[in-house]
Image (cartoon, rainbow, N blue to C red):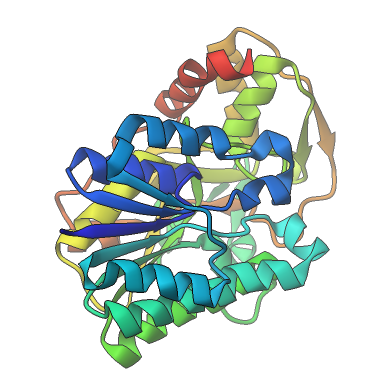
Length: 354
């Protein structure tokens, strides 16, 4: 029996991974102790999603409420399933710039130490398994903010002749820049994943995502851009835009498209790979453009205010160049654009939010 282990299994990417691989007939062992509620409050709890997975998939989904920092508990779990584990999808994290600055010890222990615990258990117990890590574009710090950006009516853009016009690739340096403490803890984890691949010849990959999104996101003010924006538009909750005139640009990748990329890597894995992954030029928007989209879909006006100061280390413009991954896995493609993503978030959450 082939077991797939998913950390953060009740979160956005974790739950999408559970659904994706259960539908393909795999048995999933999920790890999630609902720390998202600890980070962002009750409204960000993932318990509803965990319960839904258990209802939908029964014995195909085995849930464990374990902290990934608990070395003994993780080692016991790995020993229980042993060499039947063929894939680890590591999505558990503390994901917020602002929260990391409030409690750096917890942020680093979850993002860096927790990743080390998982990597070492993989090496000791199932070294032939594929290890996929949800990294982040924040490993590049604020380096993208020094690109030659142009201010337009609704967004910042980059010069058409610039090499990064189609998106930022993996050659951008992660050094000599401001990351935020969250970015620094994710850099540590990202480099560990690479090193376990290179040093021990393990099949590892760091997927450096931009904005990851979808209808299963428990969006909160500090994390979950499109989900929280749509929720505020639907419910009349006040929304705050932080800096850059609301023209900051993000590419957004639907959770299904990301997990499908994981699946392609799993079928033909490589050693110590790094991929920038996101919506690219196919799926991106500014904050102002996203607000317009949400208002059009809901037929409501968003109650929003502008805070002139931006979040420390935040990007003004980020679009991923996904050509490297597509060159390795040419059969993979993006399927969701911004409008399709927002409509799905709206349609699947009406009963929860309204």
